[in-house]
Image 1 (cartoon, protein in one colour):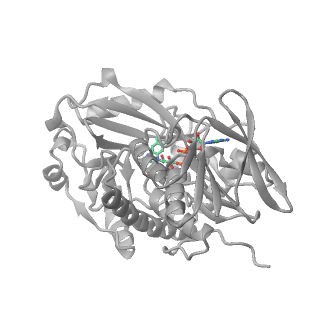
Image 2 (cartoon, protein in one colour):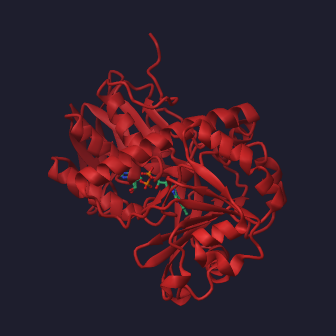
Image 3 (cartoon, protein in one colour):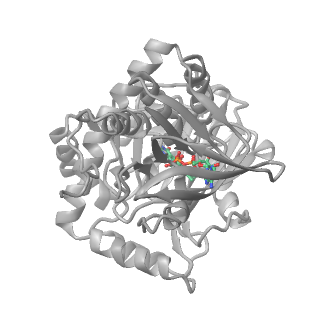
Length: 421
Ligand SMILES: Cc1cc2nc3c(=O)[nH]c(=O)nc-3n(C[C@H](O)[C@H](O)[C@H](O)COP(=O)(O)OP(=O)(O)OC[C@H]3O[C@@H](n4cnc5c(N)ncnc54)[C@H](O)[C@@H]3O)c2cc1C
């Protein structure tokens, strides 16, 4: 079977790898000159299985209201005359109901644990190098009320076989001495023992190289702008290349893995996807004092900031802004991340040499990705991974390949199934 994968980010490259392993003849098309150059480029670097709870949870509406009007708020709605944004916000509110949050947390937790196993298997099998780190993620809390909720949070994780332990501030500092400067602010921590880190862009590039060696064809600098549908099936995707020359790409099956742009392509086929771009920022700063830089990955739960040690740099990422497809830099956002690293890890990095970046998380209201069939027989989705696209990449890619090749995917997850009849 010939398969065209649209998008060479984490979702597309991993789909291509597993489809090729399943015996398909695969082409990956992307408008960028190489893999992983959009949202998968400089994310927080966390394989964060210990954080399956979505943004949409019972406490979210009050938190969003509290942050309303603050330009440095961790989660910011910039209201626009945009029906898609309002629809998304209403659906988000619905997903905050306790029963829905529990269901979504379970789906994400099961896909995430599967995905981490798949990532480890790939790393070992292929010898992939992507600045991988283990040792887990330390979730940091500055608020005693949040710490009081940790036992029930841990109980939820353990239900899905995710290992964690609750730490006092002193225990957290014993595990990660770089936190010493924050001793007086820290109220407690949760250690996600088996979590990992890694550079998503390097991973995309490394896996794409292996995929090419396994026969996958990559077609960079080509933008899909339309499809030809014949008798209810997609016959081909229409593309133009960097010089503006038009072409067509034929295949038996098509996989939409175009991140935040998946809804725009799906719309051409009359399909509405509940995905909205949620903008986030990162700064990558060179480490100048290794003894002051954390070895473990950190999640500052009070400020929604994550920090990962990647090679000889620290990547600090966070903030979520719903403001359409706007990719313009916002100096307040970047400054907040620089401020975070300087206050929390004083002297560890040279912030004057920071690399600034922002990207659009392809986010569903529930944060549960869309993987599987569509109303069009030969169109499949692997998109909408929101805050966890790196965490869920390998598991989603493998499951997608199983679905396309009519195998049963392993995890218990709400995959999109074909409509009966
Ligand atoms: C600040 C920030 C921090 C994050 N931190 C983490 C983290 O620590 N851990 C985690 O698990 N996740 C994290 N994420 C989320 C994660 O990065 C995303 O979920 C993931 O990168 C999405 O991958 P994707 O392949 O779906 O999309 P993308 O990487 O955007 O890939 C889509 C591809 O489709 C291509 N494309 C789009 N339209 C077309 C077209 N018409 N024709 C051809 N090609 C097209 C694009 O060029 C792009 O390469 C973070 C995100 C952000 C923004």
